[in-house]
Amino acid sequence: MVKVIASHESIKKQVLDNIKTPFDAFNEFIWNALDAEAKNVSITIKTGADHIKSLEIEDDGQGIDYDDLNKDLFRKFNTSNKFVEKNSSLPRGNKGFGRFSFIHFCSRVVWKTVFRDIKDRKNYEYDIEIEDYKLDDFQPKNKRESSKNSGTKVSFIFSTSNNKNLITPKNKDILYQLKQNIFLEFAWIIELLNLNITINGKKLDYSHLIDKQIEHDKKINSYKFKFKFIKWHQALKNQSSRYYYLNKKGEEVFVDTTTLNQKMDEYYHSIFVTSEYFDDFNLLKTRYEPTYKELMKYVDKYLREQRRPFIKNFSKNKYEEFKKKDILPKFSAIEKKIKQPIYEEVVREIIEFAPGLVSNTNECQRRILLELINQLLDDESSRKTLYRILEILIDEDNKDQLCELQDKLEKYGLKNLLGMIKLVDDRIETIERLKILTSDAKKYVSESELQRIIEEHFWIFGEEYNLMIGSEEDDFSKLRKLYYEKVKKMKPKEIADLFISKKQVDLFICGVMSEGRKTRNMIVEIKRPKEYLKKKHYMQIDDYKDIIMKVPEFNTPERNHWDFVLLYTDISKEHTTFFESEIKDKFTGLAKDNHINFRIFVRKWADLLDEVNFRLKFLRDSLNQRKKKIADKKK
Image (tube, rainbow, N blue to C red; front, side, top):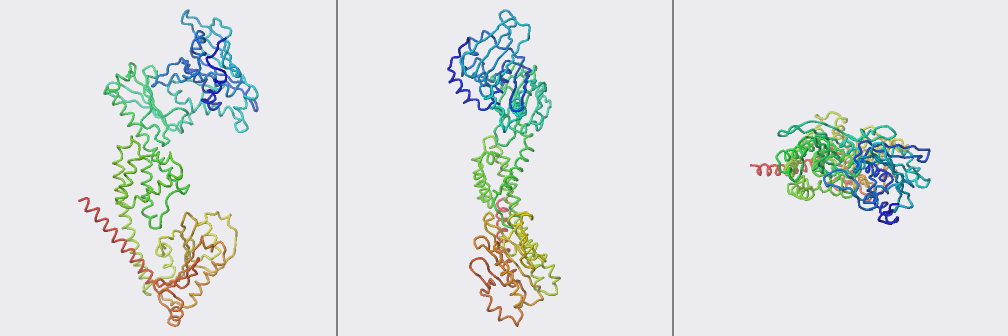
C-alpha cells in the first residue's frame, strides 16, 4: 500500500476547490496522457438512457514507472515531479490534482499501465486503484513483465449518485458535452503536436471552431519559416492567444502570448512557426539576433494585418448591438443628417483602437462613454479633451497609433462643419422656394405640391420633430394605428381597431423625447395661398383638437403634448375681427393654450418662414466663422 502525504479530507477539499466541473475533471486525465508524451489518446464511452455505463481513456505514452509510486508521483499531493518550463506547453499538470479529479464524476478509478524499466530495458505492467472514500492511500497490484507497448488505460467506475454529476435533466447528451469540452481545451495542442484524439473510434473534428486557417512560407535572411495561422471562432479554455515555435522535427521549443492577446476584441488566435532555425534555440542567446528580431516583427505585423478586417467587422457589430439596446445618444433631426453618421464613424474607430472600452464594461458604463464621445465631438477644444481621455484609456500597445486617431478626430471636426454648412445652405434654399410658393399665387402650382415639400422638410416646424406619422388622406382612425406603430413600436396585429373620425389632416408629425417617455405632437392644416383664411378653417383645427382630446391614450398630460397649427397667407376681410380677438399672441400666433397638454396656433406663412430663415442664416454665419478660423490656422 502507498500512502499519500495528505489526509483524505484535505485532498478532497483542494481538488473540489481547484477543479470546478466534472468535464474539467475528465480533461485532467487527457492532460496526464499528454504529459506522458502520448501521441494517440482513445476515449471510449457507453451511455444508457440516463446514465454512463462505462468510460475509459487509453494512451500510448510512457506509462507510470513503478519505482515512482513510492517516490514523488503518487505519494505527494499539491505538488508534482513534473518540471514545468515557463515557455513550454507541456507538461501541463504540476500540482498532483489530476489523478484525484475523478471524484467529480465517479466513485472509483483503475489504471492499467505499461512502462519501460530503464534499468533492465524491459516492459512491465501493473494496476493502480483509488476509491473516492479513501483518497490518501492506494494499492498497486500485479506487477509483471509485459510484451505490450508502453501506455496507460484509465477506467472509471460509476455509482448511481456520482453519475448524476455528468448526466442531469438539463444535460442528457453527455457525448455532445464531452466533445465540446475537449474541443475547446485541446484543439490548439492537437494542432501544435499533431495529436490524434478519438472518441468511440472517431477522430475529433473541431473544424467548426476554426474561423480562418492560413498556411504560408517565408524566408528571413537564410532561414525558411513555415507559418500556420488559426483564427478561432471563440475563446479556448485555459489558453490565451499564443505563438508557438517548433524545430525541424516538429518539437515545441518556445511559446509565449502574442502582442494582441487580451485586447478584449474576441480576436482569438494561434500561430505556429516551424523552422530548422529553432533546432538549437536558446532564448537568452537568440533574442538579440537579427533573424529573431525580424521574425518577431514579422509575426506581430502579420497578426495585425489578419486582425484588421476582423476588428472593423467587430466594431460594426458592436455599434449595431448598441443600436438594438438603445444606449446610443439621441440626435435631433438636423444632427441625424450630419453628426450621427460622423459620430458612428468616430465610435467605430475608437472601438478599433481600444475594444476593451466597450467589451470590458457594463451597459451603464458604455452608455456614459457613448454620450461622452457625442458631447466631446462638437468643437476643437472638446475633441482635444476626448483625445486626452482616450490617451489615458487606450492600452500601451496602441499608443503608437494615437497620432492617427488624433488626425481622424480633426478631420471629423472639419467634415462635420462642412456638412452642417451644406445642410444649412440647402435649407435656406428650401425656405426661399416656400416663400415664393406661399406668397405669389402665379408661382403656386397646387396644394399637393406644397404638401409634398412640407412633408419632405417638416424640420421647419422645429428640430424636435423627428417622425412623420401621417399626411394628406390619412384619417384619424388610420393615424392612431400609424402612431402606435411608429411611436409605440407596436406590431399591426397588436393594435386593436378603434373608429375615431373620418376627418383627414394635412400633416401629423411627432417628436419622441426623454427615451420614449414623452411625445410632442403637431397637427398642421395648410391653406393654399389664394384661399383666404375664414372662421370655418379655424373651427376645423379646433375640431381636430377636440377629436384628439377624446382619445384617452393621446391626451395623458405627463406623456403627450399637442400643438395644432393653422397656416395661411391672408385673412378674409370679413373674418379679420374674429381672428384679432381669437389670436392672443400676435408674434407667435398662439390662439389657445390650456397650459396642460394642448395649444392652437394660427400662423402666417410669411412669419413662420422669416423666423426659420433668420435662425438658419445666423447659424450659417457662425459656421462660416468657424470654417475661417480653421483655414487661418492651417496657413
